[in-house]
Length: 444
Ligand code: S3P
Image 1 (tube, rainbow, N blue to C red):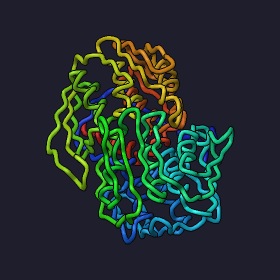
Image 2 (image 1 turned 90 degrees about the vertical axis):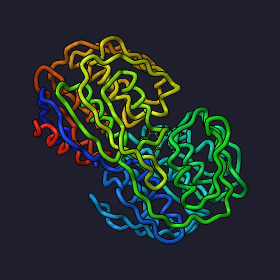
Image 3 (image 1 turned 45 degrees about the vertical axis):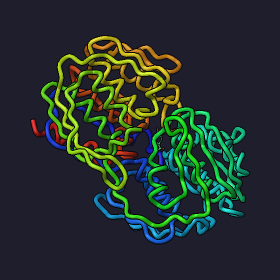
Image 4 (image 1 turned 120 degrees about the horizontal axis):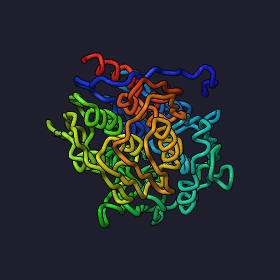
């Protein structure tokens, strides 16, 4: 529910002081959604450890509960149990399914429901989600025989879905998006004949890893693993899943540790899936003082701990479309990092940022400029001139969780305190962000 403007929490952000200590970031958001969704359509129980207890996965859980899936309460440190209903066991919901702010919830659920024969579903979300493109999912599913409609010719929610008998197909996706890919794979589980998704570039592969673990008949092939084939006919079997910490949440501490003088941080239990580690490559290019250790495999995903120390002269960086799928959610915090590099950083091939929870290119440019940063905004990216002093001011997350946390880190580097409007947005993916920040500051 939207908070009226006058009630929005204005948070005081203190400038200065280093960040020191150890932090364990919350569970990976992408993996948490998938654990709930695949658990729901498996046979038997799925037990999830480390599930992210934040607003986005809660939206997924609520939608599944409305369709008759029993899911135990999702709370901090709780082990969550999902009683799977099988591939065809979802009930027709009595009301609209509300996906809140979560694009992953809406897009993956479209794929999940497209093949639930003769059931009728309406999906909606908050104002941001109702303005995010959905045709990119509905259109490919139509090739399989799906019936998905929505406002503006199917582009925007509310969406209506009538479950149909689907047929397998070979589908090329227009953008490298794990949400589109995963929606098609979910639909493919219920189709007649096999389905192959071909991506223009490889997106995060959590669905492939987890579907295989649940027993799906899934093959990854083609150049760079861009062709994924599902042959239906096998039930998914409930699993035990351990969700690693979210590298996209760790990213705020990785950049904070690098740019804030005197900082020294250890971030524990971070997911290091190679389709997500673009941020580490960039920090290495910046010559940040970063060390990965204690690397291990946890329930099919690579995990490790990361130590990061402040570094005085950070190198600027250039990012293009090739690396974008591996760090798409880290652009807001990387644009903060660029302000403290010695030189000009260029971000191109990032037009997908314009259709995230907010238009993140516009919002980051707008907010950083208020602080005195020199930023040029382009259609598909940003040019950021490092080395200008930032000043404290009144900032606004514009209701975007990753913007809220990025601005929090930027404000520590400002020459005076700042205020942040709509800071509560952080709870979408990182409910303890503000208390973790306070704790790391107190260690001074
Ligand atoms: C996600 C995929 C990415 C990412 C989002 C989570 C997922 O979106 O930005 O935060 O869990 O599949 P796209 O698929 O649109 O790139």
